[in-house]
Image (cartoon, rainbow, N blue to C red; front, side):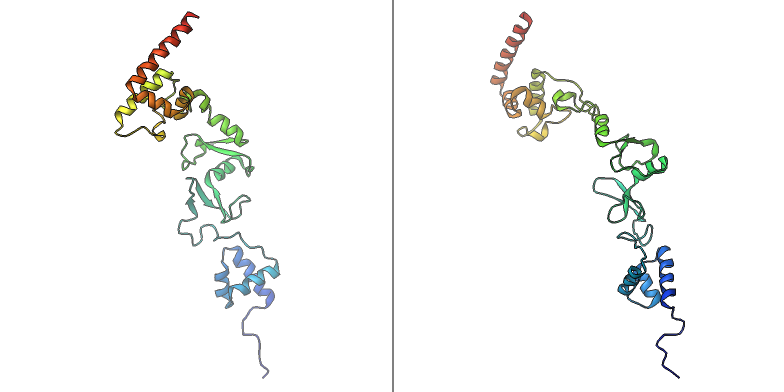
Length: 238
């Protein structure tokens, strides 16, 4: 009896390729295919390349062997969903959920230049009612940052609790009150809403350090107030 090089019931090359194609399309991994056919992963990989079987992007198929269930949160707080077939998925096959929700609502893929905005500012709230589409990032910023111009001092972003312009005198009084509350010298990090911003203080006094020096020194503060009153009197007379 001649020696049989091929094992009984072992698939032919054509059968093997078609079985690999079918199982891989169903979500099988290279490791699973290697175990199924008693080969190593490199053999499966080379067979797929030779047969022109397109491989999935790096990472596991959606929902397969993912401890997170195909849902993760990135460092910016956005929720990512496993979407290997998405044209704009990242290298690991994930896409941001809020963009996927908007695409489902529109029935098309979003352009890379389009921006989806969270109306309430919560990046994890991806209901369609909380999402708004902008054609470009510039339009998104223009709408989202209305009033957020440092040139307007403490008018700032309308989302802030402080929305009034403070006069130089008001700024100094705020700094004096802040100094009284703190048990240490005022630092730049202390100058944020509801306190005056350090930029607004710097515009009025040359630098925020100059303003703090005047505010905490009673003699310097009195001298400044006299000069301020003289200045206002001159304006009224004019």
